Length: 60
Image 1 (cartoon, rainbow, N blue to C red):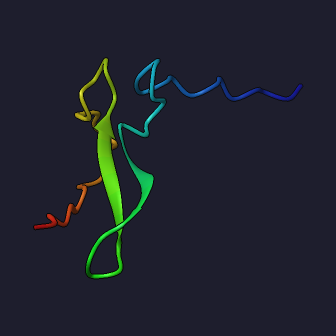
Image 2: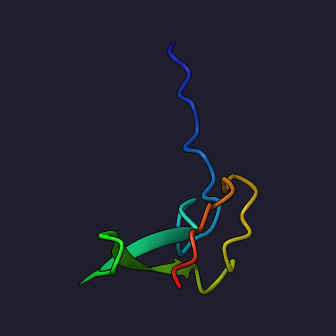
């Protein structure tokens, strides 16, 4: 008889392992790049164990 693998546990019930995202605002900056907003999960605040470091570039 086959054994089934249980479903993996969720890292965070709100973000499901994607704690930080960059949202494009649609605005072009002077250097030609897009203005983005960094948003983190409200529950885990971007600190889940599986989260990768987020590189953020500051615009003047």
